[in-house]
Amino acid sequence: MTGEPGRRARARAAAGGVKSKALFRRATALMPGGVSSPVRSFASVGGEPFFAAAGRGARLRDADGRSYIDYVQSYGPHLFGHVPLFVRNALSRAIRRGTSFGAPTELEVRLAGRVASMVPSIEMVRFVSSGTEATMSAIRLARGATGRARIVKTDGGYHGHGDAFLVSAGSGVATLGIAGSPGVPDASAALTTVVPYNDAGALARAFESFPGEIAAFIVEPLAANMGVVPPRPGYLQAVRDLTRENGALLVFDEVISGFRLAPGGAQERYGVLPDLTTLGKILGGGLPVGAYGGSRELMSRMAPSGPVYQAGTLSGNPLAMEAGLAMLGEIARRPPYARLETLGARLEEGVREAIASAGVADRVTYQRVASLSTLFFAPGDLHDFTAAKTSDTARYATFFHAMRERGIFLPPAQFEAWFLSTAHTEADVRRTCRMVGESLGAAFAAPEGGGR
Ligand code: HOZ
Image (cartoon, rainbow, N blue to C red; front, side, top):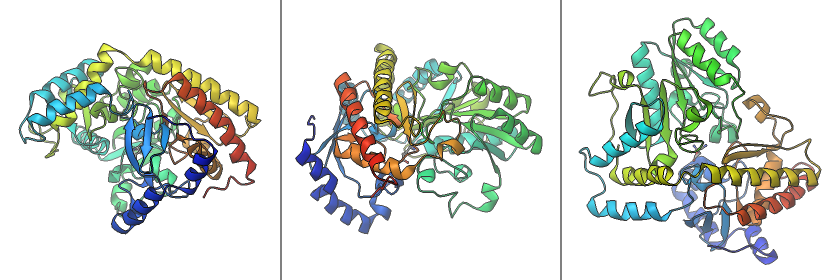
């Protein structure tokens, strides 16, 4: 899929495609907000979403035939772009054998072996069907193993939509300005303590306030659901030491960072090992999958080896396992990290030049780690969610639409990451940087950002 929108195409894009509009009308009558996950609705940037028809490599085509350079990449699974050939081949092999069995398969054993050999802290793993399921289960295990009920998470940290995590959460929760969620019982929310990201002192104080009560501290080692906010030097080691000293487990949510920052994820990149790790996204190569893992001793507490219960009809689904094996196999055969770093550095350089040329360096910050980045409409180095939230989200909305009209699909929300894949080309990146320049102009032309 190619196609660079000229002025006419841009005008069409601004108006929204006819087919997407019709689909959205039907969808809103049948599904809440017309979507299966809130961020897709464009609720925080205004306007109507386009409907995806097909993806290939770095490109996404919408229902009206318009093509975008895609930096959403399904929010992370597509490390090699949409449907790389090796995933397609693996899936066509797998589907001939069956879609789900309710019995264990060799595929699970092979994928578990790969995960254990790649992720430094994992000896045993349990497969589930989503990142949310992985984090919910990891916390249940942490509570079961420690006999404690309280968990600590970070402000703006997002760990899926389990009750325990919908307290000061990032991602779609932050985007929609929802503090928590009706339906989460107070008694459940009361067991979650929130501390700022990148603040080990605050975690130390939480341990002082609740001595002997905290089962686990769960954290994205590289925060990517408040936009991309890297850990400060020493932060991850400090929380490792604090959890150990206080008899609590450290849970790294690597649903986004797993296999993306290094074969062993953020724990390999930063050299700090958690007790439990949650995985998803890349692990399933675009199919619904999640996993959690840790030491043999800890994981053996899960049923049926141990008493902590968790189960799933589609867990270890053979199609997802095949796609996962294909992804991790490709990572082992052709490690993508040097290429992603080169592309990421080019993108960063170009975006920084665009920011400087637009004369908005005092109002915009670009933060990047490897293939993950965010352009914040706020100044300075941002270290936590309080700082990230100072972003001018109305300007982000105008910027998002200006980029979309120019054929670049960014997350329709300020507090999400841009995802690069190995399928993006240098030309894609150059074009993106030019469009960033034009779109910053549009965003700052409007007195208050605008949105739609
Ligand atoms: N959990 C994804 C990363 N923030 C967003 C996907 C979604 O909420 O639909």
